[in-house]
Structure formats: structure tokens, C-alpha cells
Amino acid sequence: MVDSSLSITPERLAAFDEESIAELARRLEDDDYPTPFAGLADWHLLRALAIHRPDLIRPYVHLVDQEPFDEE
Image (cartoon, rainbow, N blue to C red; front, side):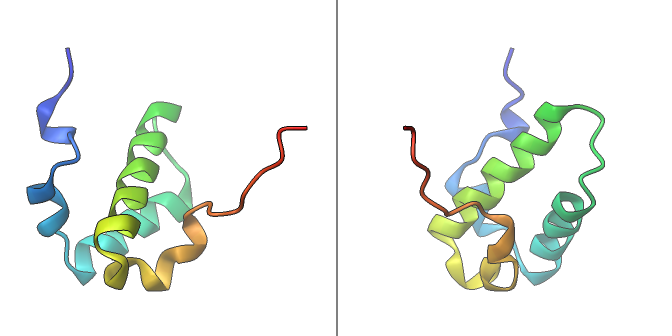
């Protein structure tokens, strides 16, 4: 069962402000999650914010892996 309160929705993204994005970034920088999936959920949320709210993540862009990779 998927927890709908954790879904990335336009409403959830719109609710972010400077304080809440700073808290998200702090969690990602500390990397102290009870499970790998909890950290991955925050990372996906930050990626969605980078796409839809780039003004907010500008100070935290280093947390979003935007480097292309070579599969060879």
C-alpha cells in the first residue's frame, strides 16, 4: 500500500518554502535515515522541487545529482 501523504503532488511541491526546503536539505546532508528508502524518498522530492521550484533549491543544487553518466 502506498502512503498517499508521501506522494509528490503539485500541492505538496507548492507548499514548500525556504524553511521547509532547508529542513529537507539538512536531512539529505546528514544522511541519517532509518532505511535507504527514506533517504531515496527525500532525494526524489528534492529532484521534483528542482524541476518545478528551481528558485527554492538553488542553494542546495549540490544535493541533486545532475551529472550525466556513461554506461560503457
